[in-house]
Image (cartoon, rainbow, N blue to C red; front, side):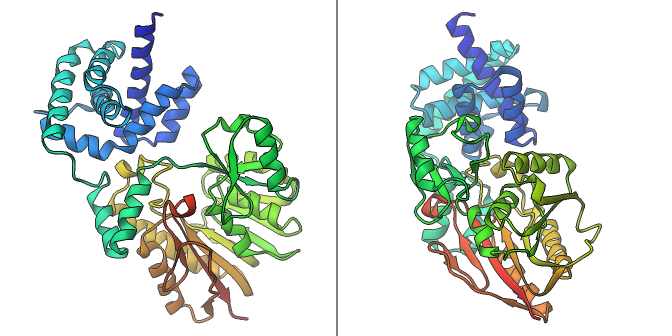
Length: 428
């Protein structure tokens, strides 16, 4: 295959990934499917992920220029239009080159009839940007409105800025088996620049991205990919030896593995409702060499309440995931304000039901990867108000924000994802 033809095929691959996202599919499975079929390619993933990251802005520029929206079957052409603008505005590609490459890639999609429309839309969008630069927030309006209501101006603007950045590759070191400094030495020997995270004791941050399976010690379970904010769950729950511990929404298993490493003599039960995600959880625990010490169950805790009592419960509740947009930029396209009421209802049900599984004197940590108070402090305050035997056990982290109940970390603070934690104790 000639080099020009090969470049067009790569762009067509990116366009198909983006098209999957535009039609409602999550970005990660679309990327995984492309990798399985064709292997990884840096340009394909840069174009796909970058275009999705800036899709709200790119769509705002192109949508008014179309006489008729692209049909669902032609979202790959829509993707080419967005990708061309992404190249021109964020990759430093000269505008004429970006237009030419996007238009020519229609041939590789088998849709040469779309070239004229692509050329017209791209040129009109570039001209419109030159006349009046984009002044929006590259996020859905409903989310911006909620951020403004919840946080002072400097905070909500910082969240939007952080969400448009690439998240670092952060690792959790199994410090039972190797010290963090020793692992940093192994990375240095492998030619991988990295540094110790400033506020999470088990966290290492790579200066550049890397293929995870090739990381030193990964296959032996010495390290896991986990954001530094998520690494505070196990120390906050702090199980004692011989405690019974429940990880209630456990898949894909990062926090479960950390709990098993943090308290190797505790009895950990990990539950998730999705069989596919439970399979990933089981694989994670096997790689971390924790599978023989964790009981794994598939169960919907809302429909089928759990029997038994536990001294410690981690409820990493289903949420809007608005704290991890920089890792999953498709959230900008897929999350709706109408998603929040059912999520809040699920959080309420899980809090109330799992509280009955917490032994008197026991501790529950409620966590989300959301930045919205209605899923976080409001949820906990309402729970405390209706639950007479519950009290908050306050704590402080080195970074973040004390709330009316619990603690909020915002995206980008100390390089971390957005995360919320509250620690609750059941009175004896």
